[in-house]
Image (tube, rainbow, N blue to C red):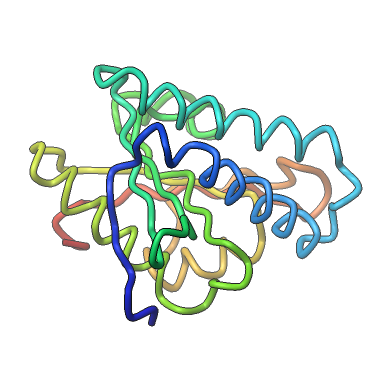
Length: 181
């Protein structure tokens, strides 16, 4: 665990360093999944996350909440909570449209495996619990992340077989906030 870890709401000054977290960790995730050649998909994912974060910081009524992890003054991770995303809607035939999504959990590669993601998840779920939110969903098409989510959140609510191609499933979880705060 990082000794000087801080979990904070991001400010405008945190945008550029948080963008770097997206760039480094998304590229790393694609590489580790063996799909690093999907340059356009990587860029689209990065731009989508940047847009979400910027909207969250600049528009307090956006319904999208972000937290960042800092070690000293360095942004090393992010997490978000907001409206259910398109992949979840597609995979569940719109069954979870009213459930908020836990997402944008990205940690700089050199800080992964140190418990930072767990601290971000717990912090975000404490926050949404304080808002009276009782359930959340999350999803992943990354096999490495799916293994972690199965360990942390149990069996998925829905598995979209071969969603990303042969043997590349997309998984969706539905969880109770109270179980994780």
